[in-house]
Amino acid sequence: MAKILVLHGPNLNLLGTREPEVYGRSTLADIDGGLTAAAKSAGHELQTFQSNAEHALIERIHAASAEGMAWIVINPGAYTHTSIALRDALAGVAIPFVEVHLSNIQAREAFRQHSYFSDIAFGVISGFGAESYALALDFILRRLASH
Ligand code: DQA
Image (cartoon, rainbow, N blue to C red):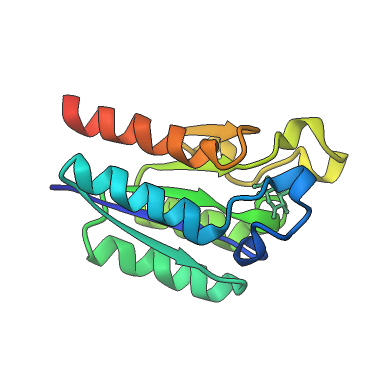
């Protein structure tokens, strides 16, 4: 049994009603529910955490290390493009992570095309809507099964 942590950054609590033409109509509860069930049926434990506060996300990452989390899936939201502190937290705990975005950030405004996370991520999944999270988890579950 492995532990997997899914982190959602700022404004992702508004999913479902926030710019649905960009981010889709799934709510955060829909996404978290699907991920939790998929991990459980594969015999693993998945926890989820959303915050609009940078420090809270950083503290959750620090705690993940002590809790023995094997993988992190993170959608840093707008912190993707601004937060060296969040990047340093992930580098500091050295837990492998997958960076996820609902939208294809490379196809959007110039300020969204740079990520402080991608070069230290295990991989990046961007542009598949809520499915981006499911694809990231699928990869992690397959990887856990084969290692
Ligand atoms: C996002 C893309 C970011 O640019 C934006 O600030 C978000 C969501 C995405 O999932 O597509 O909040 O990370």
